[in-house]
Amino acid sequence: MWRLIVLALMSGSTALTVCGQIKKQFTVEKTQPCERVDLKLHAKTGNCFIRPSNNDDILNIYSNQELDEYAHSFSNEVKNNTCSINLSLEQESQRGVSQKISYQVFGSEEKPSDKFWKVYLSETTPYSLDLDYGLGNANIDLSGMSISKLKIHTGSADVNISYSTGNQNKIEMDTFCVKVDMGSLNARQLNLARAKVVVADVGFGNMFLDFSNKPSISNHVIGSVGAGNLIIQLPAEDVPVLVTINDSWLCSLSISPTLKKIGQNRFANAAYTANSKDALVFDLDVSMGKIVFREKNR
Image (cartoon, rainbow, N blue to C red):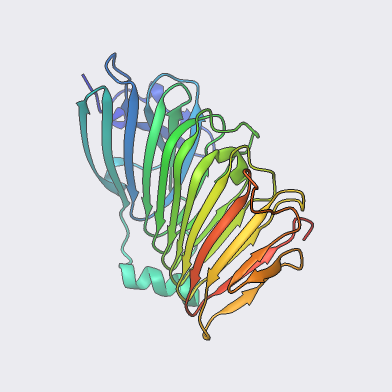
């Protein structure tokens, strides 16, 4: 049986005292039929951290908030050895959404919230992650995990994705999909994701994709930019790179000198040939925004 445990209602012995009182809020234990996990996490507001854990529990969430300071909804289902979890978290605030967006754009004397959720996922179980962030900040560390598919959408939140310990994804990832509306997203060490396909969608925000290290498998990057900015960090010159860009007269392109034009809207570096099997291939569309390709040493 699945169990959703709200330990804030239980004994205070489970609380930790590190930079304030941090309490375990939710736990979902692994059951015998659970061979993989589909996790949908929606954090409408607040600060959210995701980290790997050697604990067998497939979901542990800690927070420095009290129960009456946030709202949540939770559902789960076990079917065909797949454990599906749907969790929505929303930090209560007196400021409305329009006020929060105005605060991010124009600034305010009000201090940013120090309330957070720390989400721990098991290193021993394969996950498909669907993460949706509204406002606030998110830091996602996927070091040494088994992620089969990753989808991240940010409205006005600032999201950072990393592999801090340098441990790569334990399995090949089918799709690494990231979407930015008005916020920002930084994805570093993408070679460690072992993703077959990277999908990047930028609306009015900013996105940085780090391909500076040689990928362990061939990557196909599909991207679209509306009125925002997409910055791509290229790998060393010995990694074959092919770029195709469908642009418009309203957009701006900054192409690295290592990429030479080989055809209409097509660029490649010196290492690329038509027979390259380990190439990093980009198929991009841009309307009013900007795309920048940076060399590794910049």
